[in-house]
Image 1 (spheres, rainbow, N blue to C red):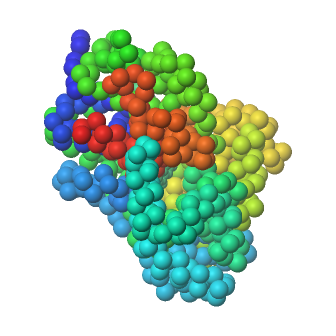
Image 2: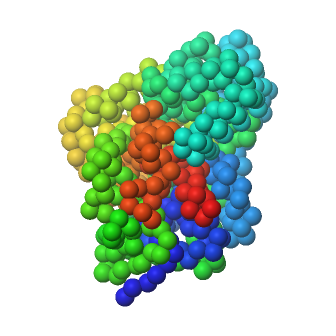
Image 3: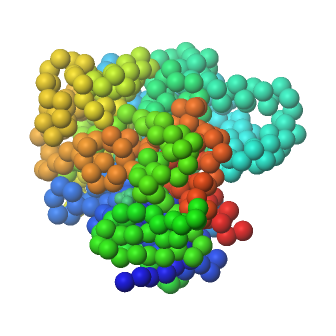
Amino acid sequence: MTAEFDAVLIGAGHNTLAAALHLSAKGWKVGVFEQAGVAGGAVKTGEYTLPGFRHDWGAMNLSLFAGSAFFKAYGPELVQHGLEFVPVAKPFASAFPDGTWLGVSTDAAATRAGIAAISQSDADTWARMTAGFGTQAPAIFGLLGSPMKFRALAYFMFKTLRAKGIKDSLTFARFLTLSPRQFLTENFTSNHVRAMLGAWGMHLDFAPDIAGGAVFPYLEGMAGQAFGMVLGRGGADTIIRAMVRAIKARGGVVETGVSVARILHEGGKATGIALKDGRVIRAKRAVIAGVAPRALTNLTGGMTPEFDNALARFSHAPGTMMIHLALDALPDWAAGEALKSYAYVHLAPSLDQMARTYQQAQAGLLPDEPVIVAGQPTAVDPSRAPHGKHVLWLQVRMVPGTILGDAKGEISATSWSDAAEPFANRALDILERYAPGTRAKILGQRIVSPADLEADNPNLVGGDQLCGSHHLHQHFLFRPVLGHADGSTPIKHLHLTGAAVWPGAGTGAGPGFLLAQRLSK
Ligand SMILES: Cc1cc2nc3c(=O)[nH]c(=O)nc-3n(C[C@H](O)[C@H](O)[C@H](O)COP(=O)(O)OP(=O)(O)OC[C@H]3O[C@@H](n4cnc5c(N)ncnc54)[C@H](O)[C@@H]3O)c2cc1C
């Protein structure tokens, strides 16, 4: 059987869905084909432990989606199709081994007071920095939202120069090159303040000493202070369910449980896809592949030697382990009851510990003290668990995709099927140190190793939640490959999208929306 669409999209991650919705709105007939049983890729919600406990499989924080150009354009339509956000006033905090904690909330005076209790000069710096955010934001968001073509970049540089002048523009350029450690030590004296902000680099692969990483601790700190955080009511999949409904309402097709086996092309032009079930789907105007770079080479059978080689060099970041817990009650944080109301509690006590963890994961070692992001969605959205109960979203950062050893010398297993449980126990031991008694509150648990993440979604190579390192060699004009940061490929009508393409990972829908805007111009 052969079906025909204007655009055929491979994978139902939020980027391809965003592209599909925009193209549908422009009158294109779209078909999205997803190998997993449900749409969403890294943004899915399910009862992974016990009935009634809804866990976010991957992404939990939807701030990037809520602040995106895509949401600006399609927010009202998505809300009509059921999208519901939950605003969070207390986005993140860090707990420290000395029994103290520090957090950022939209209550600026409270944030400042918390920092001032440690260091008055850091509190003053924080106040200056947050006051200046409005001036810095247009340049940063302008850059992160800009198409990565020479012309667009030149226009951006021209606009920045005109708005800021030469000296401030160069200062901004220097800031873009800084590592988190350099930025944080230049600005703050307290190790706790540095660690609280530096933890955000670990959400990407910007460990403290990686050049170009300063922007993330800065942005998350400033945006957390100004806007808080955004979660999805009932689960992060609220955005996926709404996008799928909106696409279908506009006449598009979203099929799940159908793996794409090949991308069809003739005479240098993509013509459609072949599904593993034998069906052929024709594409009149575009094939859009929301896959990892090397998978594109496999699906096409190769494009040009230069492009194939460049994709073969594409580097992935270390992996992630997720631990989903159904809890009788929220953790009793030793550092203070107040931590119960923060969406994220980072257990990342110092820049040195984060740097060590990253280095160990890069070297193939199970870190001796991994960074843990403890997400407490039910603190703000009780609808995700039965009355009075809770879910805990534990993100264990960073871990090796392929295990060569254990930095602590305790775990001998080198396959994730054997190492997942003892390593998860290491993470739970750390949690127990910061929140004694949490183990006794566990009603159900699901450990998701990097290998499990990849088995569910082949884009997460080695459990790399970013679908590719964001280090400078692979960012901006170089994501995924120089000359193709707009998703173009050497095959006409074939486009790559998703987190591997500029502007990269996260729920901001940038790669998908920028591509769909370009195609429908
Ligand atoms: C554990 C985890 C936690 C995260 N936390 C956050 C967070 O809190 N906030 C945030 O902003 N970001 C977070 N991220 C990152 C963010 O979720 C991802 O960058 C983003 O969702 C990627 O979207 P995407 O559209 O590129 O594709 P993906 O979500 O990766 O989806 C790709 C889809 O394509 C499908 N596919 C691949 N190959 C084929 C094929 N051959 N045939 C058919 N289908 C195919 C896959 O099955 C998958 O469904 C997290 C990611 C992970 C994994």
